[in-house]
Length: 348
Image (cartoon, rainbow, N blue to C red; front, side, top):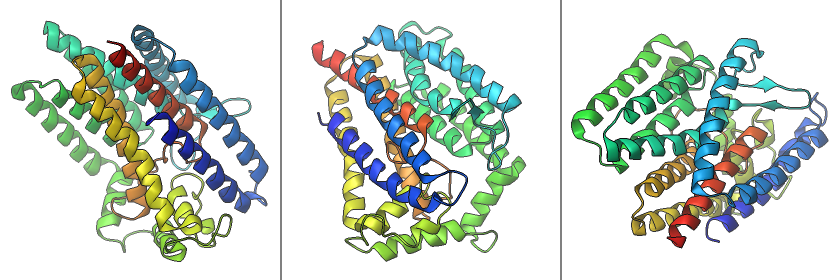
């Protein structure tokens, strides 16, 4: 209950926020009612996904994750080849009535697959770690080519935490950390968009900071109690107020107090999961829950920190609140997996 109820509340807040954000789209090609209808449908699908996945066994979610990971990798490469560029990225596959972002589905599936391989390596000391490294390498190549540097950082960081969870030997851990840091530096040197965002954050006069300025102004405009639902003025001028900057819209319309309570709704499941991890003796469950909970919370922190200009903008959605079907389904799978692992651990 301490995990599922906060998620349902977040979904409800997201419905309100997207309803408000969609008002500014009434005169554009993407009609407000289309956005509202799509978001509502994917919210219902997310709830259904959580309920269905939570009924599975651990063996079934492992098989499902391996299958989903394999399919997602293929779809990601396919997106790189045939999809049209959107906002400078090739992350989406356009279908008849909607588009999907296959890389979103990599997050929950890779965490389960990674936990399986790491625990196998810990127990048998075989080649599982190298298989895991190869999977991470595939993901890294895909995310850099798309490009989606923010998700690359998120997945790499959470994977390193999984390594620490199984107490891997320092002589293996250190070269891996240095390799990842070296890859980060290589991306900074060779990729213009990565270098631009970091330099623009450090030296704000370099590029256009319109979104960040409007985002900060939205927080100031909302004050403690907000201007009221649908009454946001500054946040409505943000091009991505329905996705990356939805937290700024919520803060302006509902106020800082409600925005802080939303943070609490993300933290409660995280604390509950780690409380269960401390009492568990199953290394696979501990490693999986650690990875899933961290990717959930860190994505939230990255999104909110970007809107507050604490870190460079990443183009990352706010789980269960931002508009985006792929993000909602990915987050729903993640919560579904968590509920399965917790249920199984309690039953043990």
